[in-house]
Length: 372
Image (cartoon, rainbow, N blue to C red; front, side):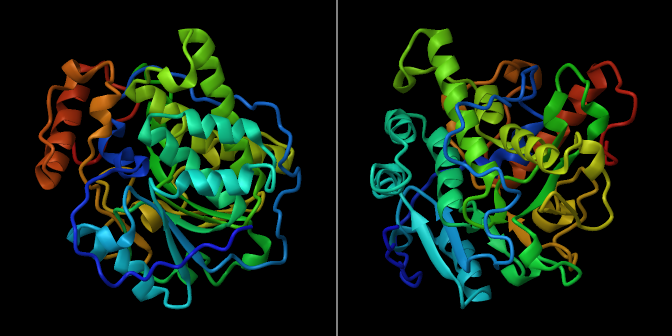
């Protein structure tokens, strides 16, 4: 493995705007709903272990990873303050940002002939032109090789990483730490809200190196892209992807589906969302430590997510503005109308739009969010 350069996070003069996929999961989740299938395809599995965890008995690597368009020296003032929260609260951790300038080198080094020897992964990554798909795939590749903490660039650390594993658990028995994001299973059979109403948080998670679920995700994505290429009759570099493709192909739906599948494989029984609905405290299933919704997704206004003032809230997601949905249009924007993109106004408008939209729909078996 090639030693990465540590980039100190002390001088950040310039402005940059970009968005990673996890930062839209909550804001747009219930706005761009349409009927799709979660990608659970598993491609040709060649390199990942069948063990529950790759480093049983080991502690989590003391590393924090982020992915962004530019290096930390060029972070925008808003981003630098959020990024500093990770180094300030975790002074003993290595911090690294992969950028548009060094991401391909990282993939070629770690998955090329001198690494994992996965030319299919390298070629697929090299062919991708959609930044959001590359960002999703890259986080899984990095976490498979390195482990540690992954956080989207607009996620602020509220507590030290050592708080990610409650004192009631032994981190040597855990391979991955995830948190509930959306917990509204009453919509699971809804023709629009569907499977996106129950998911794990993808904008922040922690794992040990070489977790099988990370490679499962990578394999799923490769299989999904190859299927789309055949379906559209185009090479991967020319694929046309809509909003729902992104959500279910590489984002929260794909992330959640792969984790549930891996839990089921490890435990020998089918694990469904029922296991994590309305959990009052963290629980371990198949080596996965699942935290309550407050941990990584507090303050959403739904899913009983509480507030960031809770001592259980570990991070704060700032939902920085994104341009990528404009490149991947959804199918029901006319149904919900246009929303302003300014941060606070956008969140207010989103929940107002959701409320109005739900009033026009056939009511689900249970009421929507408590605020509507």
